[in-house]
Image (cartoon, rainbow, N blue to C red; front, side, top):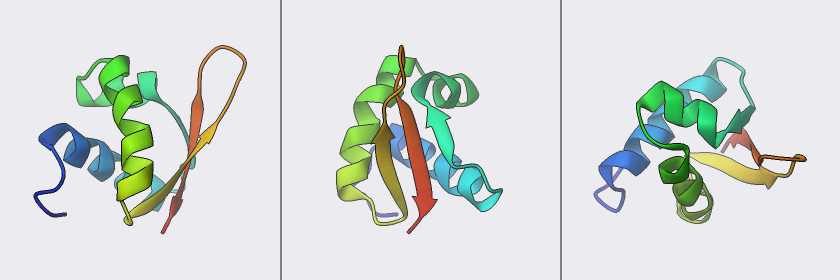
Length: 75
């Protein structure tokens, strides 16, 4: 990963990449935030941005009734 990512973005991408390698595909910002010690808002704001600029993984927004679920696939 290059310097185009902030520290928080790098941490989120590393978490997603490792989780996808283990076979996980669906995530909520709250769960990612809890694992990384961030707020769900910090993660939720960055996921759409990362979906646009990363080529490491494919991030797609999947809606649920009360909170957004994100589907992440290997790139």
